[in-house]
Length: 506
Image (cartoon, rainbow, N blue to C red):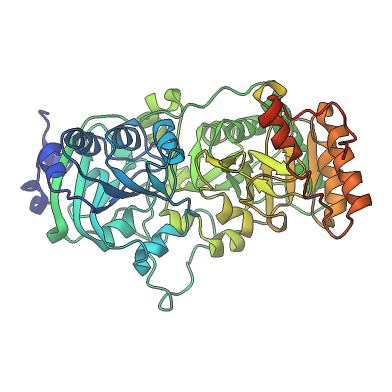
């Protein structure tokens, strides 16, 4: 790697610490806790985890891996394939790792993303033996300049006994100045987080580190991995149109201003497509206060609809990854990244009055949402930050297509097979069939609204269950326990949730 390292490592005290990835990986011992940077495939070390995984193919050891959120093929996948992970916290999205978690080969704690830093601070997850952080540069003052995510990196660096910095020499220089690093004090000693507007800057441009803790610096030239976002289609456009109709009705009724309120959108193709659909809206001067900034946010900035966006990480398509350096220069005064315990903090979310929309796997007729488990057992990715926002947002919205698996699955069911977000935290559900505003409604009224936005092929079946539950059981939230999971059991036995006899015989 024939580059002048002084442009990346601008503090001479760090220049002597450059080592190979293999040497850095050799320092890791069985049972250690590693705090690694990275969030939705962005900002993760590449050379170090690959070297550690290669070592794991020859040696028998396991580590506990803590991150901001999901990592990509160079970390989560390579480490899972090498079978060197004992415990994973707090979020993942890799198919190989998911398979090993569901097979019981890797332990997994699915955790609210704003909680992990607090658990590290309290010592609940044990000490951090090594923090491994990807950086674009080390400044003259010794600050670590993160790349495309902040995540939990600041608390990992603060609490780690040792730090390894992986300098990515291909990272855009424009990353410097993009971050706002604010680290809270211990509970009982802190004051309010002084974020009173989305664009408020309250911290440093980089992560403070004690030079004595930095054991090594690894060099990398590997780019970030694009997210597999699909292009908006007719169905996602319909979801977006219904969501925009809801926003328009809120403005018309005087509940929201023309600029709405700060928006948060979850990770994934559906949420990104919803943002993309807002390009045709009448709304202007929107602010985004989210955890992840996807392609849709850039598109809305280009369209003059979003004026500022704050988060903790990127999650971008190949097109945007390829032009990231150009985009960062272009949007630098419109984007900011904070630690995830700030971007996802309940105090700030509630103060700013954020409107939150995330993706659901399934929703039941009373408004409970499952966003993590297939048939209540197999984990997909995790709850991520959706719970941080759902509980505290001004308006909490979940979006989902009404059908899955070519119509074999209805995403509106009598009772969800796993509850991540209770009915108490859910305000609006949107499908391509319409939207159900659940605010101010008791359970039986919510059920009537939700059945109407289910797919037509399942509405009669849902109504039959609901009417029978009201008639035979009654109560505040009528359920027939013996039939509450009839949709799921029919899917297991017959490959479809559709039950031809909509009366659901005894």
